Amino acid sequence: MAVMKGFRMMIDKLKASPKRIVFTEGTDERILEAASRLLAGNFLTPILVGDPKEVKDAAEEYGYNVRGAEIIAPNNFDRMDEMVELLCELRKSKNMQPEEARKLCSQGNYFGTMLVKMGIADSLLGGATYSTADTVRPALQIIKTKPGHSIVGSCFIMVRPSATGDNEVLAMGDCAINIRPNEDELAEIAVGAAECGKIFGIDPKVAFLSYSTLGSGKGEDVDKMRNAAAKAKAMRPDLAIEGELQFDAAVSPRVARTKCPDSPVAGHANTFVFPDINAGNIGYKIAQRLGNFDAYGPILLGLNAPINDLSRGCNAEEVYSMAIITAALVDE
Ligand SMILES: CC(C)(COP(=O)(O)OP(=O)(O)OC[C@H]1O[C@@H](n2cnc3c(N)ncnc32)[C@H](O)[C@@H]1OP(=O)(O)O)[C@@H](O)C(=O)NCCC(=O)NCCS
Image 1 (cartoon, rainbow, N blue to C red):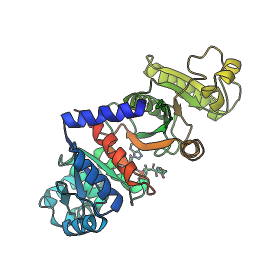
Image 2: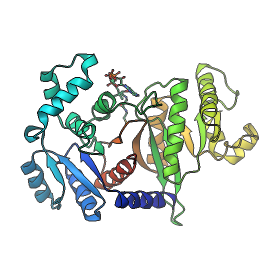
Image 3: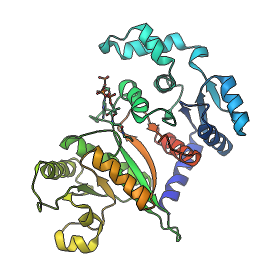
């Protein structure tokens, strides 16, 4: 029941300290359904980006009650001049001019991100129709990384429901953002994924994945994962970390006994660090499509405010779950 417990804890946190979340695609049917459920739960205020009449008409057409949501459109936002000025200031190193800033602020993805920057919202969920790059780029440019972080990474929380209620919960990173992370970046992603997993009840055992187990294979990519694991251990000696490991050695106690009997992680890993986005993106989708895991994410790690990206193929249930996860990540 780990993930159910995780969700319950997040909802309790939001009930104690309600938050506002921007949805950048306010007329999308899945967003409207999720927003109506959130409003009924009374622990999260949706801010829907879109023309108020169009949003209300869409909600009526699809049969969802979004009374209580704030609906804001760039073209009738009364603080637009202030927003444009702030964006120019934030992007002055790029010599951004008011005309370009105004154009960006008229797009839902930049407008929503600026609402977070201005403190009008605490968090953002987008990507029902925007691509990952178009959802994430404004966050990277405007919200930036948290102090002490050098990159924004991401992880998926993977949940395989079980009839007994004893769900299997894993964390996987980085399957969505960093295309070819270096050793330091991999170490940072590992720590972020381990910390994120804890929120979902995982006691992290982190495996840096490779085609080699503790020196069995040779190559630059093997060295990279071994060195990254060593860097992660140095960063966080309190975490159980091993690498490099093949996937079978990471998850099968029998294989682990043969290949690396002394490892405290091998055979029992539940937090996986992939060498690059190719491996990560393919890996989590194999678990999802062939292994019957539900995928929650990508959850962005290391941003100054929680902003998350939906898959364009998402359904309303996923929007609802991701909204709760996103808002619960707001720092108090
Ligand atoms: C995330 C991503 C969109 C950024 O790409 P981009 O916008 O072309 O990146 P750029 O190099 O132009 O950088 C844009 C800004 O973001 C910053 N940035 C880029 N990647 C970053 C990262 N991982 N962490 C922190 N900042 C980052 C850059 O420093 C730059 O900041 P600046 O404009 O203030 O100088 C890109 O890495 C990407 O496409 N990743 C794969 C996404 C994807 O397709 N995933 C698969 C589906 S889930």
